[in-house]
Each structure stands twice: as C-alpha cells, then as structure tokens.
Image (cartoon, rainbow, N blue to C red; front, side, top):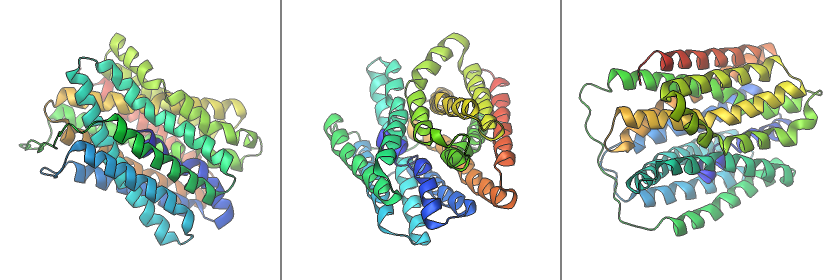
Length: 360
C-alpha cells in the first residue's frame, strides 16, 4: 500500500508545483495529468473485478508493484505530455490492482487468523508512503530527480513484499455472478464512496500547489505534505476505534464532514493555521473513509471480496477522474480553486448524508 498507493498515486502532489514551474504547465494540464492517473485507477479496478483472471493474488500484487515503480521512475525521462499521460494512466492501473489484490489478500488472511484489527496496519501503509514521498521530493531538488527517486524507492518495496508474503498458491477466485446488480444498500454506499472520491481528490492533488503559489504560506511547502502522511498513517486505527463506539455509518459520515471542513479551509483560509488544518484533516480522514467504506461494503456483500472491493474502487476512481479536470479548468478560468473546493466539500457532505440515512 505504501508503494502502490502512497507513492505511486500521491507522489504527484508534491512534485506538481516543480513541474508547473519548470515546464510551464497550466492548471488544466496538471488536472488532466492527475485525471489520467485516476482514469487508470478506474480501469484497473474494473479489470481487477473480472472473473477468471489467471494466477495468484500474490503474483498480481507483485506485478502491480513492479509496474507502479517502473512507471513512476519513467516520468523522469521525458517531457512529452502524451508520454506523461500514458505513464500516469498505467501507474493508475497498477495502483488499483495493488489496492484490490493487497486488500483482498491481506484482509482475508488476517480475517482467517482472527485478527481483524491488523487491517489498520495494512491501510497505514498509504500514509507511510505519502510521508516517504514528501521526504523524497524535499531531498531531491528537481522534479526529474524526485520521480526517479520515488520509483527506485517503490522498486525496493517489490522485493520486501515478495519476501514478506509467501506464495501459498492462493489463486484468484472467480467473482460470483450478480443477479440484477448490487443490492440497494450497497448501491447507496457505492454512490457515497464515489462522492468521497470527488470530494477529497481536488485538495489531495492541488494542496502543495496552493501552498507554493501563496506567499503567506509558502514556507510550509516542505512540511504540508509530510503532515498529510503523518496524520494518515494512524488514522485507520483511530477510525476503527471510533467505528467500534458509534457504528460504521456514523463514523463514515463524521469523517466525511471533517474532511469537508479541511477541503473548504484549503481554499478559504489560506493562512498557516488554515493550511495546516486542511492538511491535518485531509490526512486524518481520507484513508479512514477508504477503510470504513471497504469494510462496510464487505459486510453488506460477503463472499469473495474482490468484486465488491473493485466495485467500490471503480466508483471512487470515477469521482477522482472528474475532480482534477474540473478544478483545473475552473482555476484557469478564474485564477482560484475556491469554487472547485467548495463543490468538493459539498460532495463530501452529500456522501455523509447518504451514509447517515442508511441503516447499519
């Protein structure tokens, strides 16, 4: 998770301002590049849901990690926009496979071992990867060096995962055939999860760019993405504890509301306190919502988790595709991310409403 998602997906955020300055990218082009990665994420989730994929979950996970590392490093060797788009699309496919197969493999094994609380450790990998990516970019100096260093870091993770996850011959099971589509309760959750995907991605894509472009907070550039990672790492454990006290629907809704506050603050309160609040709330909630949503979906639709996880990931991916393109176009037209950020906050509040109005 740290390599495929924390680095493979999110290292673009701290590298983006460097690319904008050196390559003269518009915010629309930056948003399109982010959406290419998100489109790959959606495509990967849909393919991962297909029945009859040959090979074991472990093999697919290792292939996904390798592709993620190679596409990340390859961003350093070109300046051609179509190549950027292709590499980020392929990286998005790899990230989705990494999330679906690592989650299906790890959650199944800890479930059979009677230790479901360890899922927090699994999802903490994303925050750890974000924190690592922030430090890698800070130490790299330029955008090419940053992409290369991030890719090499991810490549090391392939060997670590191969050593830590033994090959037990767990072949991918065919997804059970659905009759008439998902149940109404699952459909509601999928919709809420898609709104979450749209709601968080604008801030997750442009937060460091906002900081770099604002003289009053630019001194925080090296720290703000690290703060997102540091608050994300323990967040799943925190939200798991909250879920144990108030229930999964209320926990999901509360996390969405808190994230909406952070998203709004990133655009409306561009001062040190507001930006730090935005970063902390983003990190403290987005992986918590991810874990709560996937856990909730598995409870609603038990059985082989792959198709359910992939369905949720696809909805999430669709929301992520729309968000950066919308934000980039509006920014180039108005010179501000206020409208896209408020729209994102509204989507999160809508997702919270859907969650809270359906029963456990």
